[in-house]
Amino acid sequence: SETVSYGIVRVDSKSSDTVAGVTVMKEVGGENNGVTVDGSPDTTYVSKTIPVAEWAQGAWGEYLGFPRTNAFYEDRLWWASSTNNPDTLWGSQSSKYENMEYSILGLDSDAIVAPILDSEVSQLQWMRGRRVMAVGAANSEYRFGATDIDKAVTPSDRKATQQTSYGSASVQPVILNNAIFFFQRQGHKLRAMKFDELSENFQADDATLLAN
Image (tube, rainbow, N blue to C red; front, side, top):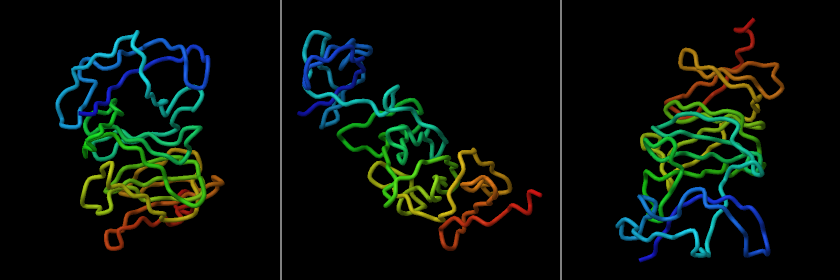
């Protein structure tokens, strides 16, 4: 059966487009790192001296940047908006907040990578988990969750829907009386975002006068 294993290497040098010198930071294969198609543990151990043909670059790093915001939602730790992927959310495995791995089995508990598929790339500024998760971006605000809001978000069932187009400032919001208070893009207006159960959408009313 086909096997996928996980490890971490640091690229130290590059001799061609297909050959690089690396330092193994975390062994590939071995204890609880591999998953097979039929669900059996991977007992194959790939040593430091055996070449491996297929590698994937990590989503974050000094070159690609790190996420600018995070939040807890549905027993996952979520991160969003790196320098290289400003419109993407990453969710941990269920109940395993430091585990961002996924298997070829496509388990519902696997980690999640979810870009906001909008016509215009917009930097995500903040996230706040309620019944569904509210996401503030530089140009718009979104509702993020499963297609059916009564179900949990999974790698195969997640959707971002634009709610408003006010745009959010890069200031973390505050939750008060079931409302998410956030600053609009220019930072001059305060808005109160509430989830309407009837329409299953967020509304963001002007709350500037309440702040004066």
